Image (tube, rainbow, N blue to C red; front, top):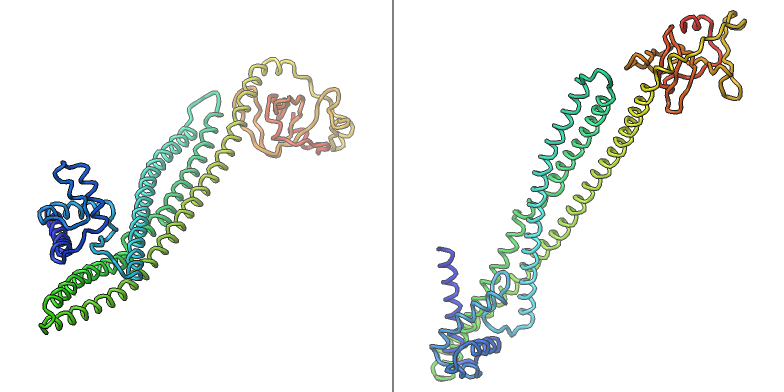
Length: 428
């Protein structure tokens, strides 16, 4: 209610000034008001057709139309911090007034845009924090399954779950870093600019300028009154003194208004430049942060997809190997007898142009440990030697180690052409 009362009081003051112009001074109706009257004439009855003339109209009609005209002018043509009630004749002052009005509108629009960015990014941070929480829970559940897997026949899924858990954990950490950077680089600087004192101080100068401008308009009316009285009674000396005092006060107001207008323009122009520069910098920082996050996430997803593909191929090849393991074990050949060189302490592997001999045997040294997951597989330890009998195209090999035959990953062993005889005994 207080705000409405203040607006009504201000509107009444503006109406009073307009009435002083139109009624007391007997001035003609300004062109904007005349156009407005034409528009009103189209909506009103025929009895008000005389309103469209440019001559002075009756007092009741003015009392009815002037408030309506001011309200419409304020709604559609008013500036950000006030409206001009009188026609401005000083071109320099008019340009200054328009410049302050443009700066006021520009800084207000930029402030609203900064506030919208802050609200949007804050909402993104809240939603992203919830996604981080959900992704972390998924990572923990996957890791728990990989560690506590109770499957008795195969551990491939548990290995894949551990790989997925690790990748998901890294991705959620990157997302958390993104949210922190958005808060630090975007939200905090823009919020500080929105609620900062610099913009409010500049707008306060503009409001002071507008108030002084209204005082100058009132003083202009007072000067006009004194001029009329002096023309009506030229011999009365008091009227001349009043006119001189009114004109002096008007000049002081115009001088102070010019100085204050320059200060307001400088302050608001500085705020406008800072708003434009800071907002652009924060937008670029937000784009770079999101770009870096998505690039890292894409790299992690590519790596995870590659590991998942290898795991899937391993499962398929293992299923095929298990299906044929029984017949392969029954058909395994007898190991060859030791040669003379083997008795002397050196074991040669019979090769020709990189291929195994007709028996297909050669020795391989274990370079990576492997734990058998079924009865058809071999347990391998680093440093063991294996008699490799057959190498399949799916990456698995069949051989014998420590008196036991079975299958193992071929990539876990390296071929050896000569081996000490003491190591050969360990094979059988």
